Image (cartoon, rainbow, N blue to C red; front, top):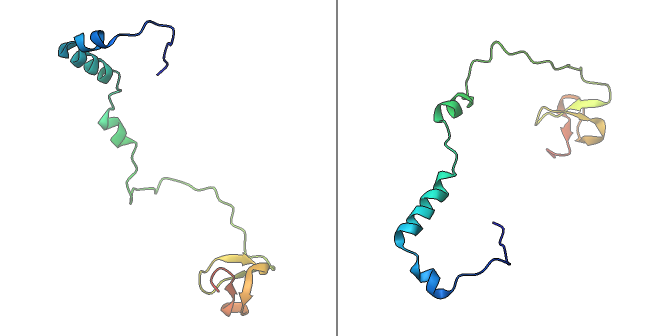
Length: 98
């Protein structure tokens, strides 16, 4: 909150003169600025696990493994040949799994 340093300040006597009712009213006014959230609308935007995605289509281009790539026998990911730690063919292991 911005503070206006040029405005006159309250003295200690003025601070103690404020009634409890005024303080409660201020607190109620401060709470009234909060935004109410519609719980129904929030619930509609949540996607639950196991939701039916049969109508959805993915547009992903699948590229076959290239000559300079290998499939790790531990993590089953395709890596570039520079990531080969040891082994050949079906026994190849990447640097991350080694």
